[in-house]
Length: 290
Image (cartoon, one colour):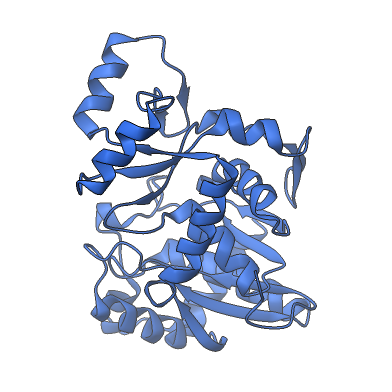
């Protein structure tokens, strides 16, 4: 996999999904990455993670640019827009198919929920019950026939097989937690692509970080567990593992994390209300070391 840019020095990124307007939590995460890059004399990149074409909107992408510029942030060009690079992810998925570490899954959400109910002792991870492996080990000829017939399906990582061929005792470095042992079992056989979307967050992020030469992945602690899977994918695809920094999540006055689903105060609303961006940035930067 060739790099878009020469990998050198300190390179990090902010990678929002344009499914809504940015809020204070986004601003905090962007500022952590931006200030780290500035302090290291490095580069700060912006990536638009718009693989979910059903929920992403161009107006939200435009709002991301406006909000970050209002905060005084600048970034290296060009901006990588994921929907423009599906062929990169398809190539990575094909490489995983050739390794024999993925399998097609035809389960609906209802199928999975029913199977979990039948097996109350099913393993659970940070995001709830782990996929119970209904389609793992299914007859390959029958599965291929269903795919050729146009049946909806996903491609899942066969974690057991993947761990058999990756380096033993894998670890990754988090700047806050130190050396972390890879334990991807907490997420299980994650989805890497779907029939209608040729990639997933897990697959696209490891490809993009390599293609953009990212040396330091700085993101919220809610993605800490995902890194276990990302390191496995990096090993399978022969990609470098960057250093990680999973910062704390910013919360409101009631201790709740800012989130789009809770209609948290957006940067656009703050701007419309006449908020001072310099004062806002200062208050957020004070939170970084708090």
